[in-house]
Length: 417
Image 1 (tube, rainbow, N blue to C red):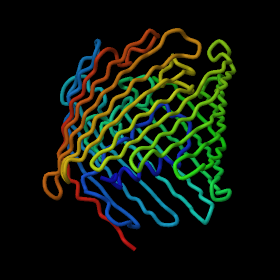
Image 2: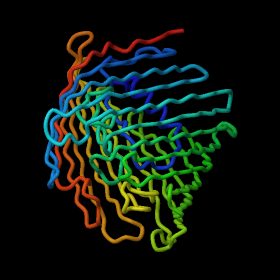
Image 3: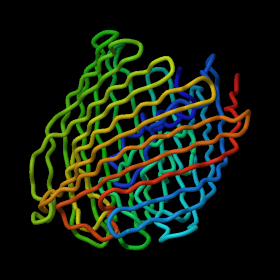
C-alpha cells in the first residue's frame, strides 16, 4: 500500500526542511493512513480528526504516576500543483484526573511549507513550531496517548527526556535547488531556530544553519552527494557560543521499487567560545537511512551521529548524539493500522564526564469503526539511565504510558482539477 496523504504532507515538509538538529522536536514517523490506497494523482487533500483520550502514566524513580484525560484535533491539507503547499496542525489540552499530572496542559504543533517550482528551479519556505508541556515522546503531537493522525507511536527526538519542561520550539527554513544538466543538481539550504522554556528550567538556545549540497545521479539506481554545513549555537543570557562545520560525502542506492538506502559521513569540526565547556575538537558525523515499502506496510531504519548545541537541560551545553531508530507499520485491510517503533539514544557532553542512555519502544493500533469513528490504543516504554548530573525532572529508570482514544475522523477528501 502507498503511504497516506497525511504522511506525504509530513514527509514533504521534512524533505525540504534542512534545519539544524532541534533539541525539542516531535517525531513524525507513521504508518499509512486508514483511507485506503491513494488511487490516481490529485491536486489536493484534506484530512482531519477530533479525539478524546485517556492516558495512564507510570514514571520510574520517585516521580510516581498520573492519569490524564484530554481532547485534541489534527488537520492536514496538501496541494500538489506547480506551487505545492502543505500544512499539518495538531493541538489540544490534557488535564489531570489523579497523580502529579506530568505532561498535562495545552500542546500545539504546526508545520507549514510552501514550494515554488519553475523548470529546473525549485524554492521552498517552511516553518515548524511546537509548544509542549514536556519532552515530546509520541506521535506528531508529541504527547503520548492522544491518538492523533497519522496514529504512529513515533520516537523521541529530544536527547535527554524530561518531565514538566514546558517548551516552545520554532524552526524556520529555506531550501533552493537548481538543476545543472540532466544528472546534476545544486542545492543551498538554511534555517534559524529558537528553543525557549517559559518556566526557566531548560537550556534556551538559538541556532543557525546553512550550507550547499551537490548531487550527481550516476544512473537510474545510484547517486552521490557532497555537502558542507555550518551551524552556530548561542544561549540567551550567556556569552558562550558554539560552532560546528562538517563536510560529508554521501551515496544513495535504489535497490528495487521497494528498497532504498542512503549513507553520508565526514569530519565535523567543533569550536566554542569557552574552552572549559566546549573544547575545540574534530569528530565524525554520520547519517544513514534505509526504507522498505511493501504492499501493506513500511519499514525504516536510521542512524545519526553528530554534535548539537544542547540537550534541553541546563547541565548539557554542547553534546554528542548517537541515535538509532527503527519503525514498522502495517495496514490490515482498509480499517486497521498497526505500528511499532524503537530507538536508542546516547548523549554525552563535549566536556563533562558521563553519558545518558535512553531506550524507547512503542506500539500503536488504530481501528476505523464505520465511516467516521476511529479508536486507537498505544503503549510506550522508556528506560533512561545516566552517569551525568541531571536535574530532578529528568526521566529516571523505567517509565510507561498507556493511552486510549476515540475520535471523529472522516476519510480524507481529495480535490481534483
